[in-house]
Image 1 (cartoon, rainbow, N blue to C red):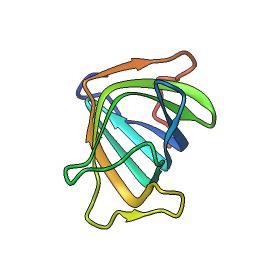
Image 2 (tube, helix red, strand yellow; image 1 turned 45 degrees about the vertical axis):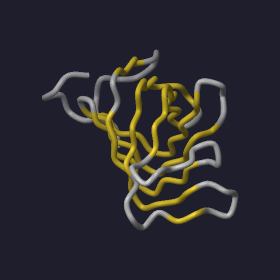
Image 3 (tube, one colour; image 1 turned 135 degrees about the horizontal axis):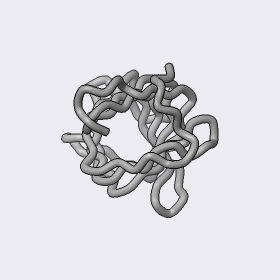
Image 4 (cartoon, rainbow, N blue to C red; image 1 turned 90 degrees about the vertical axis):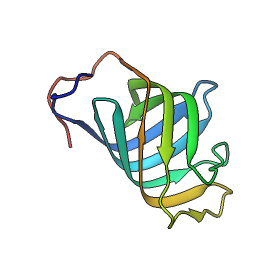
Length: 114
């Protein structure tokens, strides 16, 4: 994605790691240029935050169980309000981050969706 393009938005998102493990669920996700924003997000136990945040080598973004984007070099920052979830993961109202590379998978329309 290039700077200046409208953000692409998704609802009901699941982030899945390279080995098929669920990394996170998010109510809404916006992707623009080299940045990503997630709202009402819960990270799975496979993702353990550090004081800086979360680093994920590769993740596939599923929109309603359909693969839409593959993100490489994803680095997320969690707010101070992140809380440990009952299943061993983390929950927070929002997370923001950057990625190094993006591949658009089949079926993604060019129009912004929200």
